[in-house]
Image (tube, rainbow, N blue to C red; front, side, top):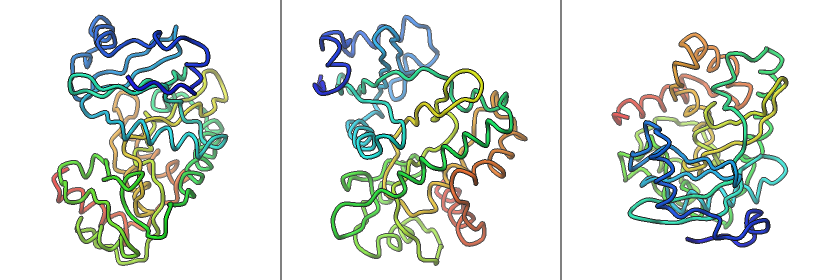
Amino acid sequence: MNIFGDSSFCKKRPTFDLPMPAAIRAINIASGHIRATHFNRPSPVKIPSLGLIVKYGADVTIAEAQTQMNVRKRLQGRVPVPEVFAWAEDEGQGFIYISLVEGETLQERWGNMSELERQAICEDLRLMAKAWRALEQEGQRPYIGGPDKQPLNDIFLASCPGLVGPFHGFDAVQRFQAACGIAISTETAIVFTHSDLVPPNILLSPGPNPKVEAVIDWAQAGWYPAYWEYCKARRVRLDPECFSDALQEEWRDRYLPRIVDPVDDEMCYHPWLYFVLTKGI
């Protein structure tokens, strides 16, 4: 296990308090969670007594841990990103040990929130999205790819290895779009993108007038064309038990544009959506 000695956990507790991967699996199986035995994406394990949540599975990589650590460092005070305590690999699965943020997801809370509460949350999220989209790339040559010039990890690209890049150079956007078959001709900037900015990945404080306590799940984050954040968030289907079709339509049409500037349907969203649909995703 790779334990980050300067983390707040290590400053308060002995490092051997962090449970090993085998113990994490045992806790999950004993919990009876439906996804506890899934190999690629089992249910995360919460250990409130340690202020800890462990995300693990075959799809969990050290790149995700490094991304979350880097984003937290660069956006300190502007975007609440949970702290990473440690990283481990065991039997083909990655384990990220993360500070536990108590609260409910925006997906769980949204249906019972007042209009004023919804608008306030959207405004908070808009400032946060603006902060990470304003991050600057290091080096002279722009690129589309994951942090540290790694391949992209977006789920919409997972079945097409030739699309994950990275694509380097001042024509990176054009070459990426050509590879994807995205027919967008307007000049597009490259910005840092969460790439999964949806209500399940936003944690709120309990009680009335909630605040954003954390933005989580940075696994798909990277440098993308500027339209990607909005298009991806608009396309992802939310849990129908929390978001009815009518509520989801309202979220997409009325509230999502308050968080990320919408793009023109004909010029950007429809060509992007055609790419998604034709790739069989």
